[in-house]
Length: 220
Image 1 (cartoon, rainbow, N blue to C red):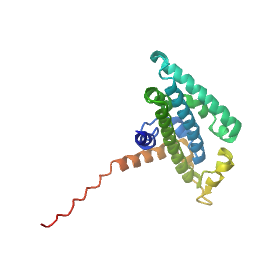
Image 2: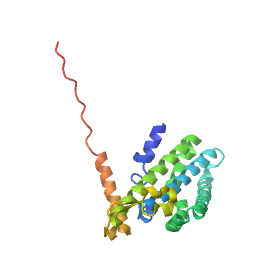
Image 3: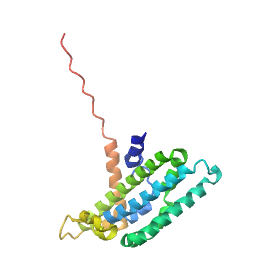
């Protein structure tokens, strides 16, 4: 059960690559790996906490009003995350801007609350939120790294400013004196990278399964 939940969140039911949800922040904040990582971690925190709360009150909330209750809970958590980022990671807060508040309407968060957390125990809901959040973070970070590398020749540029001094080790210049491809850091670049990654995923999943090797016959 636990392994299946992790596989779903990270690969089989990935928020971006499988469900095709939350594409607005995916396209908007993935101009660098640092931005994608920061947005993904913020969303993961909201996912885990919202799943925890929804699973905790699932027997107390009437089915008729469950959606408004879930939205209020998610909005409260997003407000807390928004204030925390503004207080302790202000540079990242300025970069992500409005997209932090828009986590409230992220279909993936409300979808997991309705489809999983409201029907399962607290530990299972917390694990599902963590797996979905990490899968979302991985997708945003991967797209951001590809766009950043092709656009400016760097990886995790200004990570120490956006995420704190502890992330300075991530900052890497891969291609010095690289002019960069402007298209990659513009909105069309996000769609191109996402499309190529989706095609690569489909090709990987469609690859032929390896044939089983038959045992050699034994002589009598």
